[in-house]
Length: 156
Image 1 (tube, rainbow, N blue to C red):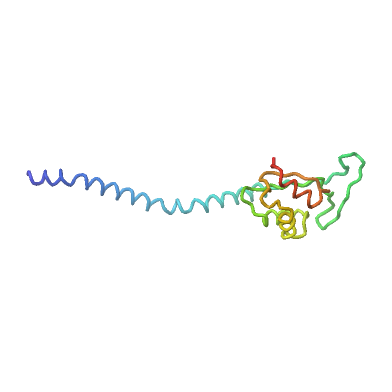
Image 2: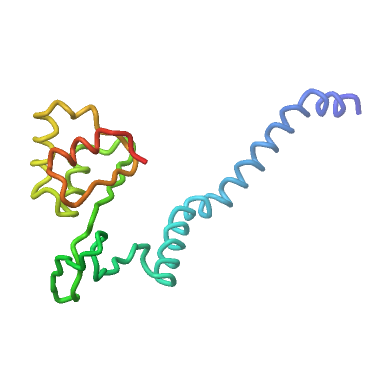
């Protein structure tokens, strides 16, 4: 009887540690598939809400009058309908965005013809380290250099 008691006394710590490791391994194995599916579930939830609520956009409503009240606007007709020229543009720059990314965004807005044109203008003026993150708003009538200078000021 004494030998049995000594055996449990000497090995009880090891047995407890082994049980804890076995239980932890079992829990991890059991929940691994759920943990690994989480990003996919998160993305599918976002897509499901997009389908239900529609894409997250800001609709552009054509206006019949200019802000000065002259009633003159530049209207364009496309396959999608008639729209007015925007009065200003808004560009959000994330922390860490490259000049190429910013240039691509400006190209999609119609401010520059190519992203490399933007990059060349920024670099030639020595402003490549001066671009600030945040939301930048500039008039549609801004020159390309004025746009770059606006992007060098802290965004909203």
